[in-house]
Image 1 (cartoon, rainbow, N blue to C red):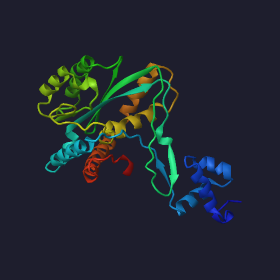
Image 2 (cartoon, helix red, strand yellow):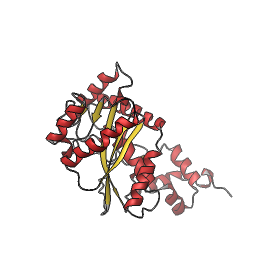
Image 3 (spheres, helix red, strand yellow):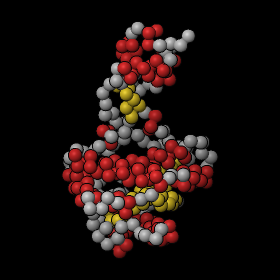
Image 4 (tube, rainbow, N blue to C red):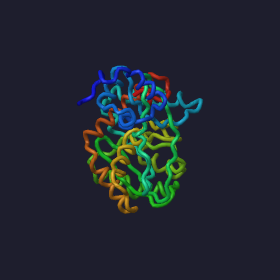
Length: 288
């Protein structure tokens, strides 16, 4: 006989039990209480409880909100006369992928009737790894390019000069108008900045660049708020055998991202720029 809410006259007891351990899944709750998952969802929905996702945020320094607001205002000024401006930026970043995989933070939920704005410090554990450089340029994924050793300014410059920028000339008839990178130490070596000044005079975004990129702002970087999480969910959908298998999974994952999805990522960045201004430069990931 199918169970319903009528079979459980005290849904508040279920909520009280859940509040003691709000990180439990509905599957585990169903097994422990002998209530179907459908009925549990009905109880949670009736009382407006939601599974809030965990977000990893970097602590902002005292001056960071002002710098984030300044950057968002600059982006807004560019977007107003040119709605296609976002698609003219080559957003870039590096990330580590470990052969032994990593915990998927999308599985972390917190059941509550109010958003707990819960943050959880995470440390990636692993030994054998691959560093990956990727870019998002409008509706195109640039790369991935694999970095075989610890990245230094000389190696980063070689990557840009020998691999990244030559690939742009073969993939499209146009060239990005702006180039964005974060504040990682290899990115602002003197030789790197001189090279970017030559390639994108007055039009690159980053630490000590013509356009100062806001530090500690993964919520304003498409590769952080979309690509790396999406790509790792795909890559680690199977057990990784070795480094070569890991690289193939990364290549396939990038190739499978459609232009329509990347266009949505550009639109999401514009939304985040507006929210950053509205919230005076504070982190906005937890309110999206």
